[in-house]
Length: 284
Image (cartoon, rainbow, N blue to C red; front, side, top):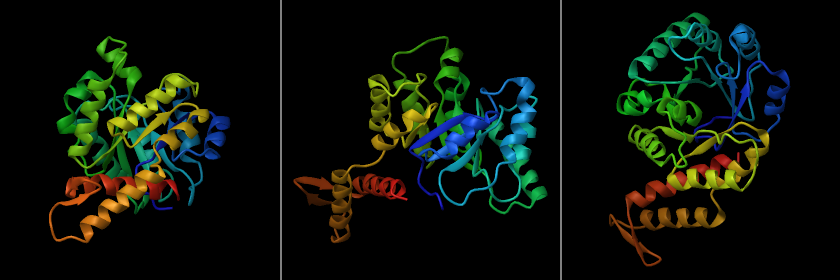
């Protein structure tokens, strides 16, 4: 499967837990994130790295990413090199606690060398986890730091610790990450809800992320995948309207036309194309 649309649901699982990895493999998540960082204690980092990078490649189903350890840790370079094996799994790495352009530039150069050594012909993409005050402050330089960068992901737990607060609303951080991502043509993924239930509070959180404009959301339990996939899949009415928008503009030489009593132009067409791309991705 060729993936060109941002995932709706990204299921994070510990890279050292075979049972959870097998369960994730059979889930409906659009992306599986095999975690070598927070979910693995220091004494098992090498074991988790070996487990994750030995998994067979996949030709169908969810895309796979590996969350490596943060730059400047004792494990980051080992994780990155191990992830950049011959073509196959993973499709991208998730770099946590990105705080500057330098973090991405370091990984970019490391991947160049590791891929050349392994003979990999399909370059790995990079997803940047924004989860510190410094990362938020440096978003402008981060989003242009590497041609490999595909996605910004907002991480709440570490961001709360970095800021010294437990916010009821993260709108300021969500808006900052979303604007930065869109300014650079990147996908924007909302971080995980920290509860494990698929309850009303979780539903509100997912709906809010979609309303803000995010492309998808991380989850930390398989029971939450269905809700995320449903919320981030455009409904039939949305799809029909998006097609009508593009048809109306395609059939006119004017820059703006009237549709259902409203003026539409290329800006509306951009949103329509995004909706149709999401719908197509959901039906694969």
